[in-house]
Length: 299
Image (cartoon, rainbow, N blue to C red; front, top):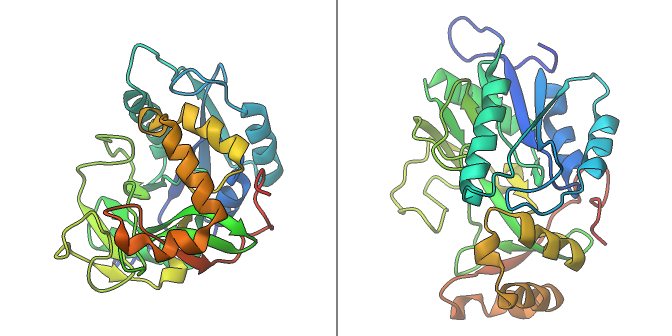
């Protein structure tokens, strides 16, 4: 393998060939995300629109992204895969799924598994993640459902508002499997109908949007979950993100941005009043900054 040797838990004890793909669009956490798994994969497919625009047709800072990738790619594992993904006659989610499937297909070549982290998702514990991938492989599963901790705002260095359950307890987020077997077909964005191996942060389900009886195959510590810096941006960059995201329609109302700005400035009130709301629950947490220091574009 080109990276650290990840071995199957089966009787053959063979190396698992792992690749990855990343949708290149947002520079904020791109370098930190790639660095968190770069040494453990053989190839990384860089998927982006050849015209440097988003699924909704808005401009993307592609040159900034590719410059950051070039600094990280010391072993020349990254493979450029431009395409046409701003198909304005299609829904933004259709464009997203189309781009992901093309990237996944390219990454599947000469691979057993494909990591599919977004550029604002950082592995806090690569060891735990790839141990879980080995367990999923040994169990005969086709997709690794690994928990993320969804970060809403950074209000001081190392201090965040994190999505939680209504009472301020840790909550898992599952945007879709974070690794899948090569050749997997995607149904919607990263979601698939493939057999899941499910990891959570407690022996019982912590995802507020799933049944409490949902199966848990493996338990990790909260500190080992993937950190999803989803809305951790400067105000200016957040407004741009709202324009290019596949969720653009839901994010467009001005009240969404105003609430984010207010909660970022008043994190204590946002956390204390969470039990009074029917949704949008947050807690204040301390989390070490991603490897390499504060993220690009975040003050």
